[in-house]
Amino acid sequence: MSKQLLIYERAMPVSSSRHRDWSVAQTRSFAFARELNAVPLVAAEILPASREYPIVFAGQGDEVVPSALLGVSDNSNAFVAEDGSWQGRYVPAFLRRYPFVFSRAGDDGDGQRFTLCVDEEYEGLNSDGRGERLFDAEGNRTQYLENTLNFVTQYQNQFTATEAFSKKLKELDLLEPAQVRFSLPGGRNGALGGFKKVSRDKLRGLPDDALLGLARSDELELIHCHLASLANVTPLAERVSQSSTTEADTAAPEPEAEAAEADA
Image (cartoon, rainbow, N blue to C red; front, top):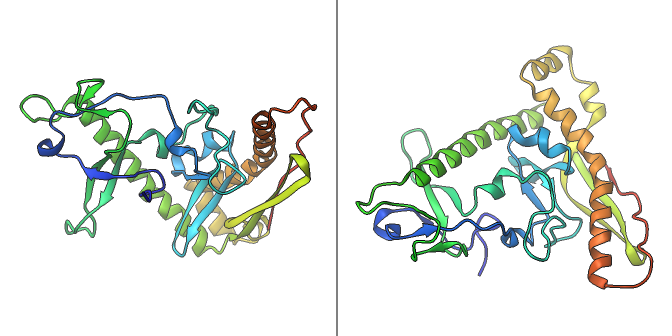
């Protein structure tokens, strides 16, 4: 079954008629993200995410957003362990909101209307009363569902602000194609492309008023966090190397991870 929005298999609108007797038993498993090699970020989490993940700008056309790299090959997430646990310190909000998500539907006069959905394939979703109920006996939203709705609403608002940030970078012509090069055990070399990064030269060449505008809006700080985060490519390659060595279960000494870099 093809996944929706990267990780959702069957996202359906939450309703009392359909989910009145359903509950959510939260698990600590991130197995649903095992095949993600990148995940979108909102602007508010660029700073904490930059301490651990390489952050790039991914997407097509006008849909370019900051994203955290989680692996150096397709369908491979170096931060999900065999048992499904998350091996990083910071968990991106895109994954924390799972199994819930907003879907865009119809028009409410402002050009968009959002509906809260839940992935009905989520392993913790049940009708056995395990975990937190979505609706009470009268069909009203529980506090759990209200809190979930608030979190997803905040995420959507922040995502809209992030789209504006990415749009400004494009308008200022600061983004340029980039590629991550890496080396893995056994002499394998590879490259991961299809994304963009901010050009340091173009950033330095901006007019003073444009730089001042970025500084006053705190967007300049986000840019510097993004650029600094590219140094995390080497730790990411090391993580992949260690994982590959463990899976191979060899008795040979663990090879040193070779440096990886992001190039224009």
